Image (cartoon, rainbow over all chains, first blue to last red):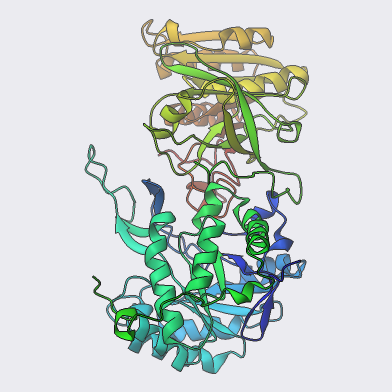
Length: 314
Length: 280
């Protein structure tokens, strides 16, 4: 028997496989047994009701997808009354993703969502900060630090900061989140992208641009997870393009303590269940008794730190 | 390819509503110049379907075609006694082109059955369905169900020309009165179709109206339904990613209690109240 449990701060997960926010909901219980997952991560909720972006909201590119769903939200009251009780039936940690377009609203929802049944707040700081220039909080260390500091003050729950790949300051943003009291980092959200229909000459997404996810994002998110794991002491949760057990193991070796699986669930809704059993099988085949033995074991000793943190490679 | 064909049986449905399952192609043949029929050898557990529901198909990646997301497709027929699942499709894009390349014996990963299907209320003894083109596929299972329930069925089938009128035999077999209208014969215009329906209603032969897909059919049945106070349902299409309600990709607008709301076509639909549906 191999030990698949992993720890994110004080929180123990039965295995390192959990969904990525936005690619999971109660509805998946129609297809898989949700009780086997390492954690449950809900789609980002905002305080107010929101409609989301115009359609088409999704398009595919070779072997990956773009989305501009927006953050349609039924609001926090609906969430507390309906969503949290659903997950209480499971003995699985509940991670609630929150967002807002300014710091005060962020603090308000963070405080209001800190209720029994919620184990962790995942802070989606990859959304635009309307109060500044509309750039996402997580694009800059300063705005990351400011918002995380404010949130740290209003909740006792663990805070996971979800970073964005749309930045040239990955390690600085990671350190700012840590300095401001984040308990873990989720690395990362989707990469801003575009696709155009050459016949109609219209962008393929109603919102013109959207986030790239799926296998083509993996090398980018893996690089970021690696850099972040090097740069901070808090746990890093890898996220981006994971669809096979090899992808999971790669993130763990790069330094991730757990992983989130997103777009692959749209292709095969049973993906996470398959990954858990395949991870167990992989560890057995390698004679590794504890999954934690893999974390951060990348053999990069010969490389200088300056190379590790280089953003402009090659 | 290897990734997509992984062990689909790993996750067992917690509540038995939908399954990711491997099926085997029994046949995949051209029906006429435009449409193909796919017959799958399917496990029993996925054949407990309702008319109007759909499956989300993992179209094969081939040397010529590389679809990534699944493609939603309404069920043309489900036959638990034969262990068969049927689809009728028109080859249009990357997904259906890849589907057309499937040969007998190939496997196809399907997810379903998904969504909320048509309802036939106990007091709807006379039902009328209006379908055009591939929309006939979606309505075929409804005809089966109507016969099973012993309801009287009128099927108005519309097409560009008589050659592509499909499923006439199927509807006739179901005991339906079949009325065909075509563009080439000049009988498929909305005015003519509306007057056919009005005559049926005047004769007391319509308790409920059903259609799918088309904006023009929607408008027509909304108008006639409102005029005579006859209820109806429509199956809608929308581009989808996950197909089970997680991603919020497939929303459409609906008129409900004086307000406009968004619903997921995959989850709250694909079948909706015809008066609540909004044109596009």
